[in-house]
View (tube, rainbow, N blue to C red):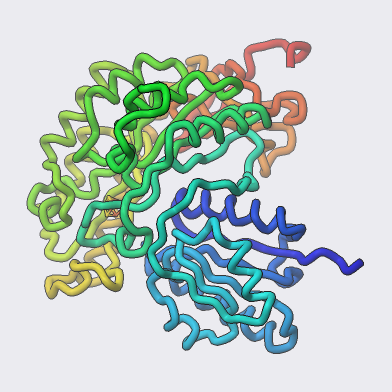
Length: 451
Ligand code: SF4
């Protein structure tokens, strides 16, 4: 019997991509392949790519170039490019790197097995046409044994002028609530404790679904979905991302406050603090609306954690407009903010505009924003000092074997002394003794005998 084929998956980009990678790794496992850490030891390498940032795309090409060379010595090496670069570049990618065996867009992730069969039969395959995503029947291979992502809606119907997602991931396709719940129940049985429900625009969930379920219940909105899946046995914590301020409802805020398993943590990208720029970005809300959402969250859940995404240096952004972004960050005081300097993405409207900013201005603004973000995050961290937080133990601290690490409900990474094997997957009360901008250290409050 020949040795099993070894595979290696490299993931770039967002949580959606990470979730797709886990799903594809699950398919490779089902095909009898074995995951390896080192790309150079693998017989199949899958790059799950992202076009959001220019440097991620460059990286794909440089990794791919190296493996394409290896393939010249080792012709049975299989190279797969999946994800958004694959979708966008399609056959052009084959012209640039003819050694690639399979190019597949994100909508085709569930078809990996079938596509590979064609490859193993000697074809070079490009699968980028739009498809209707059939219900996932694949079992994802999860990177964590404690926390998992579950897709609830694929694609996006928005048209943000800087974003490639609608081009590469297609129109919104919600999964049926029953299928989502079934996947979550299975995860609960397998010992998972926390689930993050995922969608590019999760507030759009359900818009494309027919009106009601077999038992006559109407499950149109994401809020309804949260209620429907909330009591899944074994799952102790629920999170979700990504929220869109345009569709974010008060009803959702009240539901989150009411359902005990939903963590009081909201990730709501605002992208810019300036109304004119928000309009140019095609975001469909104003700074005032965004601030109203934050006020409502804080009035209902005063301790809720807030995170967001922001872009600086969007075409035409003036210094005064950028300062509106700084001002919004200052007012809200985010626990965490993902920042990026705008980079034009092929196929998006804003990439063609003439009022692009120079790299120096973008770099300077990014630095100033990051500085403020770190300062605000450190201030926010302070509130934890001396408090007891419930931490879900996810792993050993890779830098200190005597410590374990996990997250508070508010999603702050927290370290404390303990044995991972004994504490794995448990939610422990931890008294916070030290705070940093983006992480905490504490002491476990229960006697070791309990653990
Ligand atoms: S909401 Fe806008 S930024 Fe988010 S995926 Fe859709 S188009 Fe892109």
